[in-house]
Length: 518
Image (cartoon, rainbow, N blue to C red; front, side, top):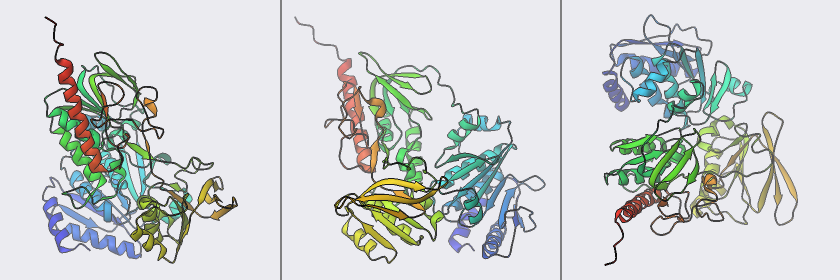
């Protein structure tokens, strides 16, 4: 099942086991069951601390559990955890076997205090790059607290459950049979939700020299550059990594031929932690109040942070179509990640909205999974690179409609069943029957909370000069939330560094007293 290189690597990992563990499979006569059996046999052969058997009684078949001999198992995999989920399996083995997790002690304490029985079921697709973090977080909670159980379910393998529960986006999490959440969630976010939905209280903090709002590439770069100057630096963000967390493959970060969004986000956070930076996660900024000595950033939690200078690096989010039915059917056929949710539409008909590179790439990827994909573009021509357009047009199960204005998402009350568009040249309305819609029409800056405080462009971007300075002295901005062209990770990093250097220069000049006339 496993090739020689992976066997060697996994054997080295399994040397870290501190106590015996067992793998128990619940089998049927499917090919997936045979592959699971082969996988478990391979793993057991690599360490004398791992045993495997196939006499499980789990109702979901094929599946297997990971646990300690003689104890009830709290981690299960319904399906074969390969692809993005192989790391999830390795972590489950190590953590069940006593290898310490790389999680803040405060988070571990919160998990250990959970006194409610929680049975989590997470539906995933093996091509989903957001799913592993969610499953890994829930598995760790199950390792640390006997009140928690975690089951990973491969939606492609258990299609009957996917259809019965109306699942049309992953990761989709259920807790004790009730819908818990959908999409990427960090372990801090999950723990906060199960702990009465409260984030850890923010204690009173002394004013910062530089306060960075946002934890994406621009915010991380700004924090590193500020901290290296030896000044008091803070980062406040809803989630560290920002939109990078939702990016599958990154191949244009110079000197790094290939990486993935979650991996880069983790590296960004680790780099910032190398310095004395106060990182405040799960905190949403709601207002910026400029001041003469200190600027204030007011948070949704009720806390207020003060700083001599502020760097706004709040990034952007997926732009929505803003048509009737879109919000109603979000995660019920309206999707934004073809890599994550595409496998759930195997053999079905879907549409992609948007003719730029991301839209055409999505259509090409989906064409290999679905029965048919239709790409709708508002403009009179596609805007994607010529090589991508040629590839799309060569596919027999793909169609392109240009000059099309999407007007409505239709559904049966439970899920999407079609999309309506207007031909912009003739004005005639058309409806396409389909099962899913993937929206790929660009980004919207996260700047709503700044209206009336700093100057914004007609597109809602923060207006900055060549130094990253906004219309408010001492307030700088960087990254996808600004008017700087070309929304790229490497550009955001550079702009974050520039804004930080500008903030430091501002602080130095502000600290120098004005000359007294003779």
